[in-house]
Length: 215
Image (cartoon, rainbow, N blue to C red; front, side, top):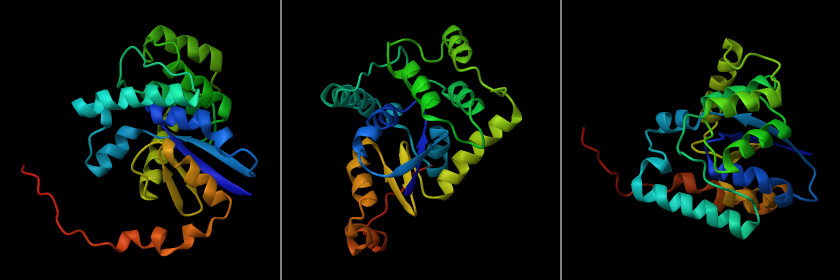
């Protein structure tokens, strides 16, 4: 049985869509899943990138696309009242309900749906209090151990090669994004393509030009 590590940040609509679709995408296969909250902003900082919501035209397209994907895939989704928002409180709350950097599917589902269903403010203090009362975390979300777990999860994912969310890791393979779920299924089914030069050789392709940024 293969083990899947699902790196997620609740701020990402693609992580929400992938989370909701995962059971159907992998139906009939034998696998286990480890849900690990990470800080997407930490990925962006490590790789010197802007998030999709920080680029004006890409922001609008991203929101339209995820709403369309939800519509066509039958996944309920509404944009929260404000986006992007600071997800730290949600990430720490979720981790406070788990242990050793992992959370169960119920906790992940509850927090994801807090953000992506209903169209309310995901970071509203009263809603966060209500969410905490519902989840009843065993630990203090503001505790040093919880904060340390979030940092450790983020650092470990970056070290493994993750650059965005959702990233689903199996063995030494990383699958990024909602649209990678069919690839993930094929790998779990033992498709030999994942041992071919088409998978393994792309890292050897030289870059013919590099963009120079001015300081």
